[in-house]
Length: 311
Ligand code: SF4
Ligand code: SF4
Image 1: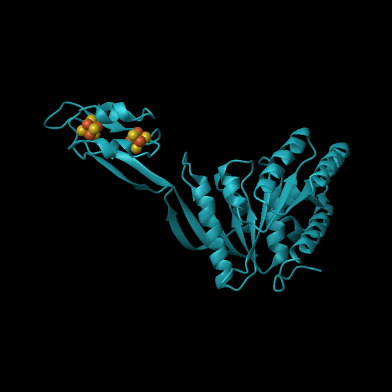
Image 2 (image 1 turned 45 degrees about the vertical axis):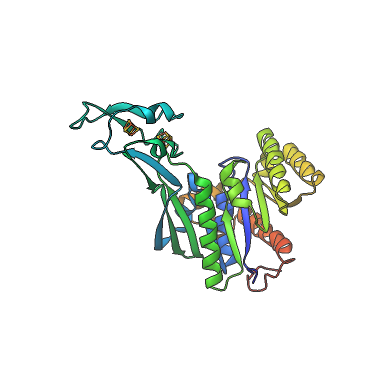
């Protein structure tokens, strides 16, 4: 049976456009939704929602090679085959050779060639733990999030894992919506964030790079055929560019879902570790409420009867 749970992804062309503040406010307004932080390379939604971890799991994005010094005969085959230059002749000696080869775990790309061709079967090739994922409770409902290890890659796989787990939590709790803080940019993590999503909100700022980034992100969502809305954050800092962004969005068939004014209240909310709409009735909070109402119009075209969205 097809899942009823829908996914709303909030993304931006680059980091720092305010999308996490918007996602946190959406989480507070939606009430009956699961929120997921898929910006795993720079996760900060937890700073606002203060999650209480209830379940955790490990994440492995791939395998890495490790030479067993006691078994290595220093034949040099692995070093010659490794096209990532990850193998060095500076490992400890053993009873047969004064020095052995060693794998640099940072340089190893996990292709497995060395382990396959080692005549002594001296190379372990096993999955490594690259990060952790969590299911938590917050004052705004359930949250699924993750932490990628330092200098670890494969965040696209971790994003997919967080999405799957968030959808599972929503289905188990009979909730219809997952609100996702997506990865910025147009790389692998953002593709993993949006593929198969029901609705994307692109948050942009009124700068020339924001205008350019909107085009790149819109190309991406168009490629995947995902319904896309646009919101200009701090729109009043450059009203001319805001108009250009909105004109470009409309020309591309993207709906402008709202504008959020520049407001010190956003920074104040961050300092208080609260979402903007949970703090006093600021102008930005009013704009975000209106944005959420606008989003609801787009979402209502699906069956969101239990979501608690204002009509
Ligand atoms: S191929 Fe195996 S035996 Fe040869 S140097 Fe590498 S680890 Fe050692
Ligand atoms: S797994 Fe691939 S990248 Fe890593 S050390 Fe072996 S050959 Fe090099």
